[in-house]
Length: 249
Figure 1 (cartoon, rainbow, N blue to C red):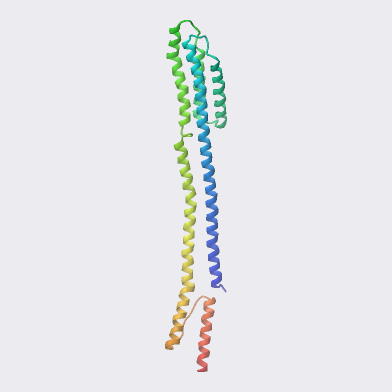
Figure 2 (cartoon, rainbow, N blue to C red):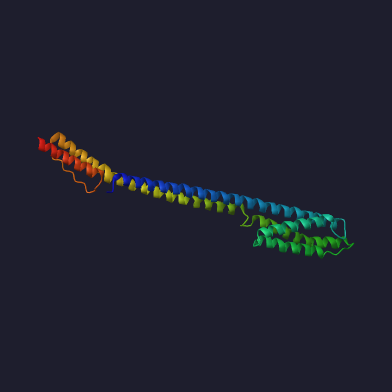
C-alpha cells in the first residue's frame, strides 16, 4: 500500500537532494570563480612587473647611448651592458611563461632591431655624424622597442578590461546553475503542494463535511476514495462505525 507518509517522505527527500545538489554546485562554482580571479590577478600583476622591468632595463641602455652621443664616446658605458643583461633575462622569463604570446615575439624582434642599429654606430670624432645617426636611426629603433613593450602591457590577453570581462563571464556561469537548481526546487515544491492538496487536503475535507452532515442532519455518509491509503482506511472505519450504530438503533 502506497501510504501518504511514504509519498510525503519521498517528496521531502527529493527536495532535500535538490537543495544539497544546489549547495554543492554553488560551492564548486564559487571556488572555481575564486581560483580564476586569483589567476587573473596574478597574471595581470606578473605582466605589469615584466613590462616595468623591461622598460627600466631599456632606459638604462638608452641613458648609456645618450651619454655616448653627448660626450662623443666610442662605445656606451657599463650601464649599457647591465641593461642588456637585465632586459634579456626578463624577456626570456616572460617568453618562458607565455611562449605563444605574439606581443612578446614583437618585443623580441624589436629588441634585435634596436641592437642592430646600435651595432651600426661607427665611432667617429664627427659630432654631426653621431647626432645624424641618433636622430635618423636610433630614435626610431628605441621608440619601436618602447612601443612594443607597452603594447604587450595593453594587449588583449593582458588587458585588465579583457580579464574583467572573463571574470564577469565566470560570474554568469556561476549564477546559471544556481538559478536552474532554484527553478527545479520551485517545481518540486509546486508538485508537492499539488500532491498534498489532491491526496490529503481535499479527501480530508470531503470526509469532514460528509461526517458533519451525517452527525448534524443525518445525511447519509457517502464518501468514496480511489486511493488505497490511510485516508481510505479511515473512511472505511467511519463507514463501518456508522453501519454498527445503525444496527444498534
